[in-house]
Length: 188
Image 1 (cartoon, rainbow, N blue to C red):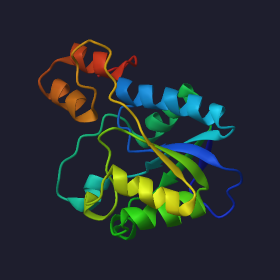
Image 2 (image 1 turned 135 degrees about the vertical axis):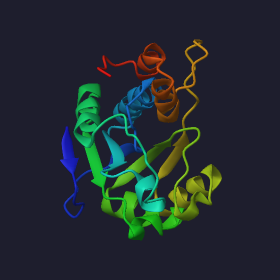
Image 3 (image 1 turned 30 degrees about the vertical axis):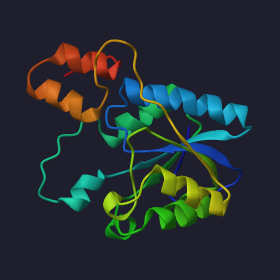
Image 4 (image 1 turned 45 degrees about the vertical axis):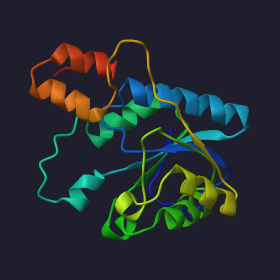
């Protein structure tokens, strides 16, 4: 997997998804598998857009967020999943203050050359997370990017696949539940 921290010499076009992906749990894995399929189907490379630091640490600096994975562990999991490229951003005040339109147009399309963006069913971004999926589709269309919403991952287990749910399970001492949500061999 190629990791880009600077985006001035990006070649080609990409099918990408965006998020922090803490733990790279089964819901994330579902999205990443679909990402790879979509990229191949459209003749592009797969890319993950993620952040070196958790956005919540910028938005709420005093919040004690317990992360599941280190940055290195997340990157290693993306690589193990077979993702071609990782665009690694620092979440700064400047990034925080971009509207969804600016982020899509200026960062994702112009700098990273993303042509097709897969959005998780509950993912929101942009200043104050004020805009939603229909806005993302419109902004994408205006700059030559297809924006596609991904379905909820449901394997019939009744589990809710989220990083927050993994943290809650660990706090409650339910390591088995956390491991079922993650789907990786974890040492807690």
